[in-house]
Image 1 (cartoon, rainbow, N blue to C red):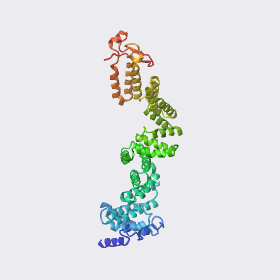
Image 2 (cartoon, one colour; image 1 turned 90 degrees about the vertical axis):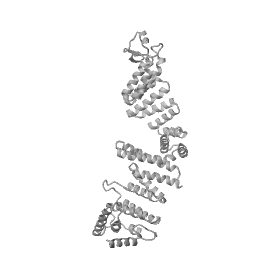
Image 3 (spheres, rainbow, N blue to C red; image 1 turned 180 degrees about the horizontal axis):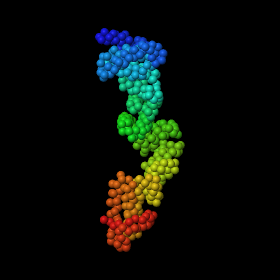
Image 4 (cartoon, rainbow, N blue to C red; image 1 turned 60 degrees about the vertical axis):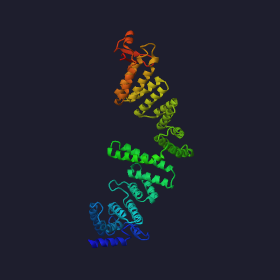
Length: 470
């Protein structure tokens, strides 16, 4: 065994310092490994030799794995692995998976930064060889190039701060290829590499914002995709938290407005840019800015979609321009077909017209919302509030001026029946306005009795039940 180990070590030293250490940078080790093309099929030109070497390294690798990749047996398996890598690279994809483990071991044992750098060269080479020879997933047959590039980029970024630009470009390409299927770790390190590129002066600040926007879309897609899968949902929530916390120092409204303001001024009709500006300013609650207003308005004029109409509406609500907001909401509802989305807009229109003191229109839209979504308890609350606000104006004596409170409380009762989550809110309203019911002597004076039906006149025009204040 000692002879074998000594022989192995000597062979490795002669092969440029334990496989990957191109210490002098003038040896032919890497060239020796890469200046060939696979010949002879899966097992190369010498299939018997390939199968033998493959078996020798695999068996030794199993023993090494049992030692948690710590035993010196790695020195015995490495020459056999090296032969397979060089002479029959198509034999098994595990040649590269295991090769990375082997190089990890030697990298961690390296005595100097110079040696580590050489091993990192070899790690990169193994990653690239796997991409070249096994570009498709063995099970699905689909391309795995983007995913493998992500692993390569993460490896480089973690091990070599001085190779950040290379890691960034590899990770960027990975995300471009994988899009919504990008690996969570790839996204996290792509963003870290982006920030490092900016800090080093190789890119402008706006790259951080653009990359954040790109990654956020992917994260949001996967949060929605895995909403009912706790395991993966938790993973993507962690990714979101990680990226958001990393972005936080660059997410102030002043920074965002400065970056996107320049882009807007340069191209105020670019739909992609307008969508990006409105989305990120909305996400970061920078909606009171002039840039948000201009971008939203330009987006709506260029591409009047339900989303842009709603943005315009909400923006005008913030500015208390309720009549203008109503116009945009009406435009939005006309462009939407989904009943539940229409219901939401009708509900908002009810609130808008309440602000405009147009109670008839407010109730009309609240009723439309309820017709499409019977569980819309807030629209019942709104109608109740409208009735309560009208009570004094809808009568001319001590009974008729209080009758509207009966109708109001009826709506609050309906609200908590429609949506159990509104029970506390509805009960508070009921307790508040029940105190304003007519007194028993007033009811008696007007020749009516508790429990009888009563028609509330005025614009309300609802039939309710007579009740005395308690």
